[in-house]
Image (tube, rainbow, N blue to C red; front, side, top):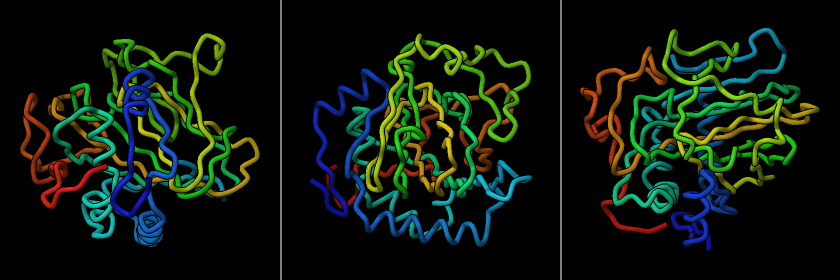
Length: 277
């Protein structure tokens, strides 16, 4: 069942998330929310924030991102607080509370075939704990041959991999203790890789340590817009990293070991007015 504010999920989806580190939910987000996000993307492209990046500045087509948009965009804050996303994340992570960390706009223009390298998200962020997930929501159809890919079960390997810069593929931290990212593309037969063709309204939810990458569109056929939101559960704690983490939030007042909830990172579940997934 789907409505503007509710989506029914069950034990099967939660079990798949826990086992595989990623699960695809069909028709989870209603069109009203997709329209809201699309309007916010237009505003962000017209007025990029200081966090915005162009990952292919030398090409006619653009691969652009912007971060922490919900901190200043009232419509995106509505999505954070009132859409089914928070309840979905809390249910899948088996968390009694949920904190919103930040969001990201992803836009690849038509003709852009750049792949997003294999990586984990959590090493980029100042968050420790098992209950961290990302909800990735496309605004345009995603064919399976250019979909996000996930290595099944990699969130349980007990290994944190070296973060890499999106723009040039260089190491994100200098001299960090993290392991090198395995050559998944060079040895694909060794890995159990998940991916899903998706339609607008579908979403993928994945664990912060699930190894994943964005397959290149082999023909650069069409533009792709996607919106990702990062959610933190009961055990999430603020953490130091071996360099400047991404995003570089300042003024939150947190110290290593503190629970993540603060004015900058609000608790959004349970909702004050009630509700369910």
